Image 1 (tube, rainbow, N blue to C red):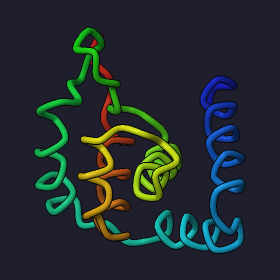
Image 2 (image 1 turned 135 degrees about the horizontal axis):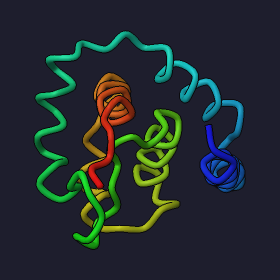
Image 3 (image 1 turned 135 degrees about the vertical axis):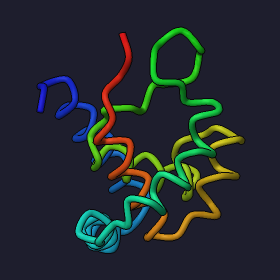
Image 4 (image 1 turned 60 degrees about the horizontal axis):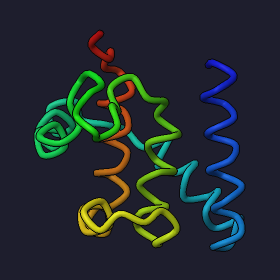
Length: 115
């Protein structure tokens, strides 16, 4: 993992600890990270994301292809609890359960960003 990604993950995690109970959040992140993923279900769910999250830069929406699984998990949880503010992402994230978050994080972490 690159230093930049590690710093982003660490900063995101630290921010979360100020907003919610760190022990509960840590447990939830660990459970999501360890959850088994059905690749077909993950690909199905990802179809809804790719209309905005393209595989290359330039669309104004962040590229999530190739992003670290833990970063995606933390980001979605931050949108759910309102720490990260984006109306579209909050409305999407709020409806995701742990299985969906695990599936999306696994799917997008395995993709490679287009150049």
